[in-house]
Image (cartoon, rainbow, N blue to C red):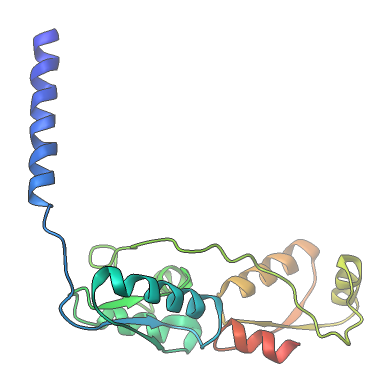
Length: 193
């Protein structure tokens, strides 16, 4: 039994070492990389993409152009990445909603075999912002407002994190609201406050 385990270990080790040798070539970009953000400028995805691009440029030795392509809750920009040549020069800087929600709805192609997630850069908590002149000042007044009338809720777009959070809140509290989708988180916040 011990000889079999040693042979099996050598066999597995051989393939691990061989895999390391075969994958030792490092991809080095030879031209500008386009990083598409499928949301408006100034939101969390945009700011994160710009910070990461600035940090990665010296490491990769090439320029990374951040391009905003907002619309249809991120699916326009995401689809342009999915439709681009799969050569490593077009990246998506986004939340998961355009890649998950819209794929489930059939609005974007099946990307599971052609696109992979390089990193999870940030976690963006959903927060509630109200206009300073609003009667909503705490949790109780928020719930009271929702129960007494239809409150307008702005979000980065349909199926964006804020929209999903609002839907969850409405379902748990048994209230209705008016959804006002924007082309990104920043325009939604600016319009609200």
